View (spheres, rainbow, N blue to C red):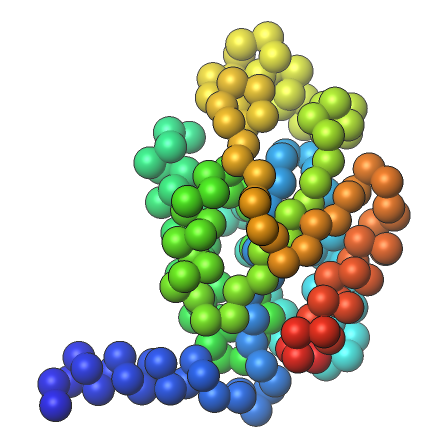
Length: 194
């Protein structure tokens, strides 16, 4: 038996076994800028830590700064960024950590690729109308994009492909942030991760 096969088989075995810290999972929050991904994922992380779970949040802006510095906002570079986040989430979740990604991840095919490669993967669609996201825009990015100052801005001059079959859709313009976070935690209970 080759060493590569042995390492792969051991990796698959570890991903399928219950970790002593609890079963790991990747929570993949996707949605437009300003939809509430970072806010909701932060609340979810705190709730999970309070019940003793190990949690790591990979926020899109922080990952861009620390893991994907130098990447542009071309489709290819956005896909590379999402794949990098997915790789880290996969490593964390197979080791009993609840890995939370809060990145726009605008392209459906790339998210589906992650779902196929991460054993325990739950896609949470943070659904919020564009006009509400524009109103919430504290960084002024939408205003710049609408003026043409930021090219290829997701939701304005570049597409956002909403999930066709997410594990959960939260509507941050009609429910409170605590209601949204509680629905995510409930999903984890329902799916056997808590």
